[in-house]
Image (cartoon, rainbow, N blue to C red; front, side, top):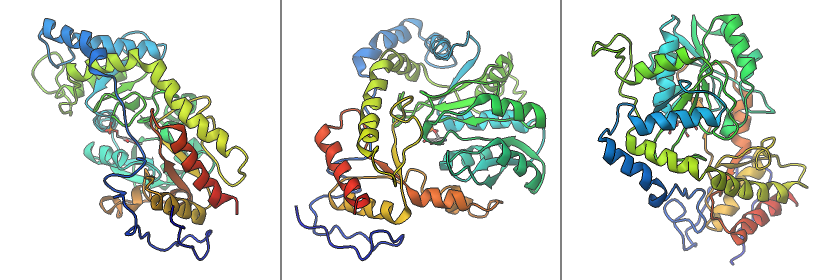
Length: 393
Ligand SMILES: Cc1ncc(COP(=O)(O)O)c(C=O)c1O
């Protein structure tokens, strides 16, 4: 391999623009090692459920395949029937849960700046204005203390608080249920990547079933809560706000998951133990390889106690930029999954916000490495060697 061009100072935040013109790969379209390569349940695994759709001749509208899937999701999290509603993606699920919250009054939606664009889009679609706040530096998540302060600092009445489980990290539902009860402000948890680590509480939590998520079906999602009334309300909103009649009594939309999506949801659940162990294998391999590096961290328990599909590493900003550069030069794709955070998006730059120093620092310090089920050991070792080469001078 050609020598990597030297970098003036590997620990400077501003590294030179990447020039891969002498390299044979197109990093954006066909990297040698991609950052993600989802593998969903194969057709054969979904066939029995697809046949059930043919038999029932119900293709959407919370049909029988979907109803059984909701019960299976509930049971997976230790809850009886009536505690889960599926939706056509997590953004819709968040929007509907926030519409329900907004019905109680208020205009602002407190959310961390350190999240994906969908969190803010959902609040805006629910008629709310996101109020962007900072996160805890050790977890990268909103805390109840930050959220409580935000209730005082917001420019007006807060309709909802949206804690985000960063990249599927576990969140303590008790904390948020307590804040919801004490403040009277509804909480909606964005646990888009949280299928594995989620523990449901009373506050509705929204999980994504997008192809890039640990339990993927292409497009889909579900909302789960220990409070069945919350789920019943969101279900009505997901069906045009209809409540038993064809009269729309609530704000809503068509948020339903098709029976075909539900069929692949069953297949994905059947294969979940295998899929989970594959992801744990990749993330555990990275974790073990980086364990001796004092300047690199991964989320607590990731690849060990819980899993997701993003292999984020955190290190000093200049080192991260240099790792990104060297991997790109080797044809290995990486991703800054959340970019600079919400305030970095053009669409959200004028949103009200507090000081966002921690979110800014996290954005500069976080990089997603390649992570997908069949990534081979040689590819992982190549990535690891480049990361270690930067961090061990
Ligand atoms: C934090 C967060 N919220 C919401 C979403 C949206 O999920 P979906 O693609 O299912 O709408 C994502 C997707 O990656 C996400 O990361």
